[in-house]
Image 1 (cartoon, rainbow, N blue to C red):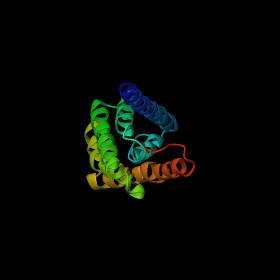
Image 2 (tube, rainbow, N blue to C red):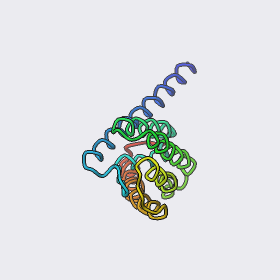
Image 3 (spheres, one colour):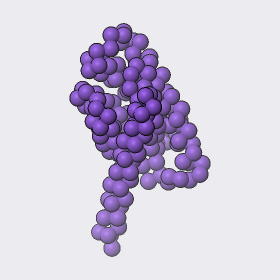
Length: 166
């Protein structure tokens, strides 16, 4: 009986992570089609999912794998695939430690992307803008996507009990 419960829990965890990864890929694809997923100010709708560690630790591998696949599938250069994924991983990992502080959950994703993605923009894409400027513009995009959209997602999921804490 205990073994069956553990197996069910593992399947639920993997399924949740896979669904989150798939959502991340689809939302990044939509952002790419709208022309807002890359460039100096990036507003990836998928970054709103960075608040999901508030509900489940399965969001950490889900967002990470989703980011990797999305960056690969939209044709990002290898440094962006690697370091963009790293930025998302660090953000959601840190967010998972802030589960008791609802309004701080998006902050690690904003900060990790602000600190890592400007270097990717300079070295992988050849963007010549000043590093401080890129940190500001990436930060603006992350505040919109992870902060505002993510905060709205978190509030909605919690208010309507669409996603229970695991």
